[in-house]
Every structure is written in C-alpha cells, then in structure tokens.
Amino acid sequence: MRIDRRPGYPWPFFVAMAATLLLFFSFQALFPILPLYIVSIGGSPADNGLATWVFALAALLTRPLAGILADRWGRKPILVLGALLFGSGPLLHVFVSSVPFLLVVRAVHGIGMGLFSTAYQAFITDLLEPGRYGEGLGLANVASTVAMVVAPLFGEWMVRAFDFGVSFAAFSAVGGVGLLVTLALPGRGRGGHASAAQVPSGQTGLREALRRPGVRAGALWMALLGVPFGAFITFLPLLADARGLGGTGLVFAAYALATSLMQPAAGRVADRWGVRWTVLVGVALAGLAVAGVAAATGRWALVGLAVLFGAGGGAAQAGLSACVQGSAGDALRGSAAAVQYAAFDSLVGFGSLGLGFLAAATGYGVMYAAVSGITLVGLVAMRGITLEA
Image 1 (tube, helix red, strand yellow):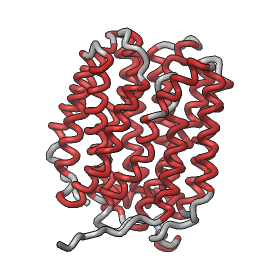
Image 2: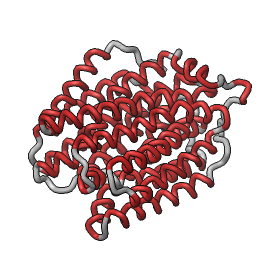
Image 3: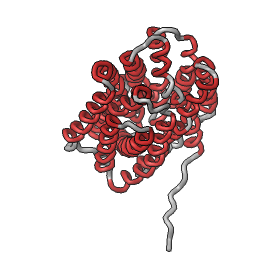
Image 4: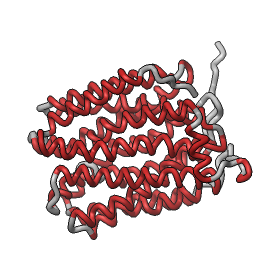
C-alpha cells in the first residue's frame, strides 16, 4: 500500500515557534496572578477589566501598522521589535505601584504582542505550501498555547515561593531568551514576500485586504470569539477566588492542552473539507463552555469546562486563520493578519471593559451567563456568512 507522505516544514518554522513559545510563556505566566496583583495595589474587578482593555486596545491600534510594515519591510524587523517589547513587558510590572502606572505598562506590553503576533502569522504563512495553511497555521499557533500548559502553574508557584517582583523579573528573563531566538530567524521565509513595488502602501493594503471576502468573514468571526476569550482569561481567577475554588493554574493548563491538541487536527480538517463547520462547531463549543463556567461550583468542573473551551476555541481559530491567510495572497499576508487579530483584540478589550463593570454590579455568574448568550446569539446571527479561502 502506498503511503502519502507530506513534506516537512523548514527549520525557520520551528525556530519561529520556539521564539513564540518563550515569549507567550512569559506573558501567560501572568494570567493567574495579575488579577490578584491588581487587587493588591488597590484595584477592583472593573480595574481588572480596564487593564485587559488597555492591553487589547494597544495591540489593536498597533496591528494595522505592524501588518503594513511586515508587508513592506519584511517580517523579521517587526518580529524583533515586537519580541523586545513583548518580552520586557513583565519586567516593567516590577515598577508598578498603582493602577494608572499599571495601565501604561499594559499598553507597552500590548504593543509588543501586537507587533510580534501579527508578523508571526505572515512569516509562518510564507513558509507554507498552498493547501496546507490550516494544518501549518494550526501547528504554528500551538506555540502560543502549549506554553500555557505550564506557564500559569509556574506563575502561581513563583508568587508563592517568592513575591510579585521576583516573579515578574523571572517571566521577563524567559521573554529575553525568546528575543534571542527571534534574532536567529532569517530575514525572509522560504516563500519570501512580494517586492516593495508589488506591495500596496499604507491604508491601501488594509483596504485591499478587507476587499477579500475570506478576510472580512474571518475578522467578523474572530471578533465574536474575542468576547468569551476575554472573559475567560480576565475574570476566571477572580471567579475562582470568589467561590473558594483555589488557584486557576491547572485550569489554564487544561485549556492550553486542549487547544494545543485541537488546532493542528482542526486545521487539517479545514484544509480537506473546508472551514465552515470547523468554525461553527468550535464557536458553539466555546459558548457552551462559558455557560458552564457561569454555574460551576467545583474545581474539577472548571477544569473540564476549560478543556471544552480550549477545544472549541482552538478549532475555530485554526479554521479562521486558514480562511484569512488563504484569501490574502503573498503581498497582503501581514495586512490580513492585522485585520483578523485587530478584530479579535477589539472585542477582547472592549468586551472585558464592559464585562468588568457588569461583574462588579451583578457578580461573575451573571456576567459569564451574559457572555455565553452573546456568543451563541452571535453564532446564530452569523451562521449564514460565507467562509471561503
């Protein structure tokens, strides 16, 4: 029997994944402790939502420029600048003693994430063969989620063993190694990118990307997915603390493991049979998982719901990345990634800001029930939007 062997990926693919894993490890180690740190410096649940909003808004405003420059100047310069700011972000928290200063630090951190992750999508797609965008991007996205299997647990252990200051410095040291790995990347991927003469300039590139139906559809679905994701990462530690469920490092680890396993598999399904059902089923699972969080009263229930949320969100993201990058073409990959993740960031940020005020007024159960309702109603309303690469 003849076995159809697919070609492997080139070495820069795995080096870029390693850099991403280290940088996101330094970021995700903050997840279970940052909400508690905000409270320790006098913040409230609403301030926690505000901090997420500032981070996401900074990334959102950075992405269009990051996409344009990645298309015009090449991927590596934007990756390096992003890695410098993203990796040093945790260290800046050492100098924070009030919520206003914290918001400035969150903005710098968000700018770094917006630069790096936008250029990363374009860099990875340059290395992929047509017809493998779902599988390749799904695998590449694992680098930012597999770190979460360990990073939140590491963050919880660090703050118990030492204190917030030492923890923030240690996280940034990991990010510094990620910057060094980024510097080892070649200037261009195997596929390169279009010459400057072929690349639309400025806002023209963004407008051209938005003319592609797959980019528009992918951005709308990513925006919807941003609502439950923002609620999950921002308020889960506070919900667990309010209900006496202990730390959430294990919960985040379960989420990360589920989405890491799901993304490459879902991406391959999207390559073979199309992205529509991959996205629809993924968003539905995410909405149902958040509904469960609203009523969860046990630690292991939260772990199970995190697995469900990770599987759903991972499937949806893999399908949407394939849709957007498959629609963009060589010259617009950076701009298309900017549109996709700017839409995601906008709902993560603005959603978390509003949800923080809702949680303060009604409690976390009502807030998560509202998030589930928004996600599932949005799924029904948008089910007719065509997802085509």
